[in-house]
Image 1 (cartoon, rainbow, N blue to C red):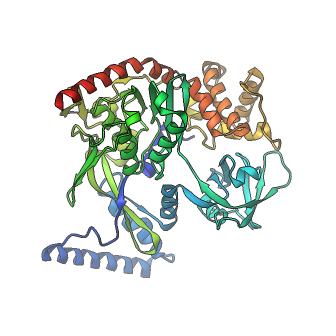
Image 2 (tube, one colour):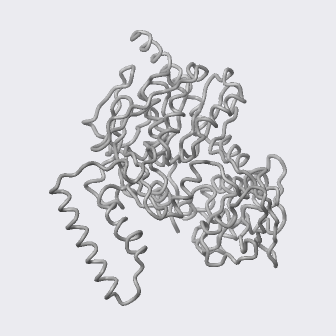
Image 3 (cartoon, rainbow, N blue to C red):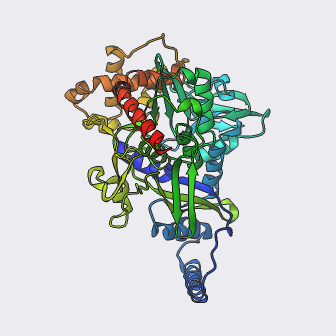
Length: 532
């Protein structure tokens, strides 16, 4: 079974890029010397000759798309760094759609499981799919009568999207049902948000940002805190745990709102890229309350820009585990046929001048993603200071001001340990438990011993190896996971997340640490006053 680390590493590779502005295919070309031009021409002739030999003599027919899109171009990029990558046309369209966070469609997230079935993961609340009673756990069998067997989730997603107001017939199979259920869904304008905010305690706001992929992160935070009444905030917990990154502009927008206007959020420069400094546009209401930022090893790139800026300016107390350590900037370079390169063009630096990129030159990319040691990754030669003079280091991600020890998982947890919401045993158990019935739970529901016993039997049916001792050791963890999945089905993801956060000991510890954040804020204010 895939482990938690494997999922994190794969996701960081796919999503943990700090995307700089979009560049056209010719806009960054630099003039080359005649000698360099001659060398490139010779090398390209060699590549063309090699491909001609393969195309003519290989035992099976050769696809030029496979040879170049999946072979030569990705192979070239792998010689550069762990984050430069090639994006095929389908992936690039999906990336652009996520960045816009708005499209015409039915309003749900889908994925493909290991059996190559396309599953409904999340119908958005009050979106057309939600109103048509499409549910988490449904297997999409046909769209407008076309069988989805053999299609991947991207192809099915393309079939579901379309002009606002048009109808689409979606056929799904539910656990325990004999026949597919078909819903007629009228497409709508779908707007998505990756932000949740609410009062975790009176006067204490909690903000979770799950990704920086979309272009509305900063705006969503402004809107949500505005509706809550930011003038009443006495302390704020910003949760960036598991946030793998995204757009540098959104990181600047979010981090900058908590800083004074004009303060540096991040800077970057590279061999062919002039230094660029991104400065804060502060929100006056966000300047005076203490903040604790939660991070972990899956907080990468844009998350590290935000946490690094708030740490360097002594604006927030950083808590958790050392972040991933990605300090590279990728720009999008569109290619022919709708594909694109995400090419590393620069390093980025925190306001104090730290480069938090981990070393990848003396190890394989596999070791870079899976085998890094956070305790030794810190660069003792890259010592900088925060605004008030605290020492901070580059090299190995953002080291938190306060470590929060991560619990050690036993063997059963590692076997079941995929990210919340993945197509795992908990997801499959919930589909089996509810069957064709619409999921309903009373307010405040908790898994009892009977539910846990059913889950135990379900794991045995799945042939997941475990002992009674291993199961008993993690009963609270199993209950929490089951509750999250069941709440997702019966209510929605926001209700499930908030129930989980309400019992999260790390969030409780963050609330306890707000006085430390307040002392830090006062020290920063004094330092700023002396410099004026």
